[in-house]
Length: 83
Image (cartoon, rainbow, N blue to C red; front, side, top):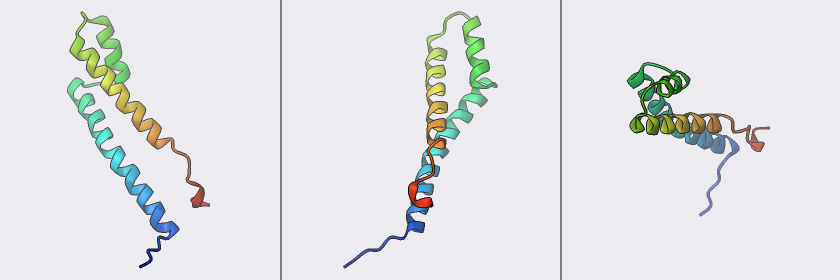
């Protein structure tokens, strides 16, 4: 038995894989934006001015990591077989 996979099928798979990674990351970013009513940059400025709150700093680090992950995934160059 032989399985044949076309370039289009591989492209489709890679696109679905990226979408499946992006969706939960964006959801967590929206969660933090909703919870604190601001962007990550605004949140950082707020917590710098407040009394130290380890929970908020932990969430800042987590939020920042989600944004970096999203940027990394979205920055993946075109795959060579797209040409």
